[in-house]
Image (tube, rainbow, N blue to C red; front, side, top):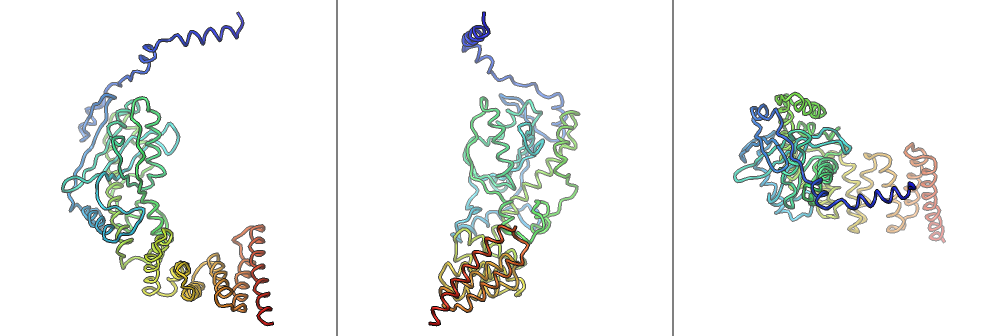
Length: 419
């Protein structure tokens, strides 16, 4: 018999496998309870057995008066009221705690299919306060039980994280996908990632955006005896191997700090965006004004940026004037935009100076018909580009050619006006 016929015969045999046999192969085999279950229960972890295996849970409750850093957790409700009273449409705006989840994970690595979540931290509002539920993976064979028990598949929620949009939630989606024959589909959820919000608010104000640094410098909280996050996977794997969970409890504490800080960070971000706090820098308020501008809320953006120009020293207000000028230009207030660009130039960096000079040249050319001034500002921009180290050779040449065309056009207009 030829190889081709043998292969065809094998295919036919495979097709004869009954549905019953296939179903038997797909039946979920529930893993045994870990031998160290009692040890883990002795440190306060509650053992939960479901249809897919075992998961451990640590549950804590906090009153609304519980203080974390500079804030009481109950100030979250004040934040909701601030958003409700302002009527500003903003990516982080919330007005109630319905289906609101503060979420953070700990994983066995940073990427790849082999990376598992071993700790699902969920902090939610409850009557009179908040409840923290930390689900711990009993061991890798109990992953389906672990994912099921979190109940994040049950309904649509608003998920508040710190870098969760890029890491925690995609990682959770991957794990659900790998177990799709046993688990329901994980729904798409509304995401509020406070890492992105922190970058928008404190860009050029904080040297790093690590949550622990934000806590210390902006939230009034300093961790004591905290384990570094990079040690968490090693500690977990050691706890599974040895059965001793005592060091693992420190990982849960680290995760608890992360989650409590998500609430206080949300409170602080809301106050800054809606109220304003005097102790913050001109840079912070300039960033906030620009953020509202990027969201097309021109009125709010202009209000904040104008406040910066009035309340801070001139050497701190360069970027406020720079961004304010664009808001004024959008509102066709060209004279104020002209003034603001001029105020900005001495205090902004080279790239923004070039942009400002070009904008001034445009206003002089098209609004003032002052071609001498337009040429002056255009030549200022040309010289900055020519001396600049910001661009490569080709990019610089394109920019110079673009500015040269502006010069020639203004010179022609000047000649025509002279006639």
